[in-house]
Image 1 (cartoon, rainbow, N blue to C red):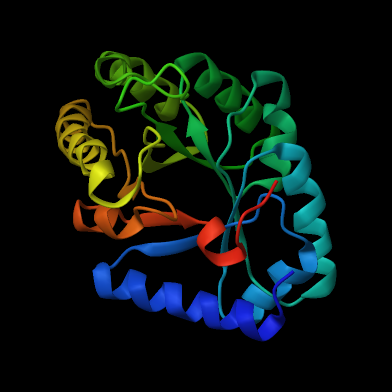
Image 2: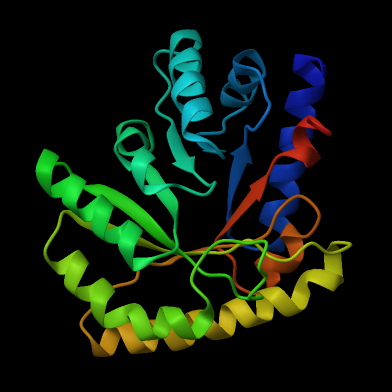
Length: 234
């Protein structure tokens, strides 16, 4: 396990690289990371964290809050969400970033209306149409926009923007085609949405530890980094 000093230095170095590449936000991904290590990153200035599973998000949010009770943190669910776990996710996630179907959006809308509490979501798009990845296929997202607009109009839902997980590559320039496709699609979908009176939101979340600088150069506004900070995890 890395020392607090090493973690702090790594975080500051990553933040410097992100800022040098553009104006994206740095999200720290906490999969497999202990609350004590997350607290070190909080002390270093990070307020934006992503977790892959609802159960881990529940446990970590509570544990970090106990360690740093005055910290104002944003926790985002960045892993696939099943409809039967949507209620639990809405209790602990400040944003659900992986809404990849109309059915899931309808479920979240019903729950948000029931509890009369706003929820923020991002629409996940599978730009590479990789069968191993979740999310709307590009054309499916464009086709679904009228249904999405109708759902959002009738419920306390805020669209943050778009989220993608690229195909597995060697990183760096090898990942650029995914981010080019994402940027192009985002512009098309945004124009379609505006014609429907739908505000998709400004978030364009793409890029991870091995390729975040390339993602930022192609317009990503949020990058998600875990292994480059904490090292390999199980």
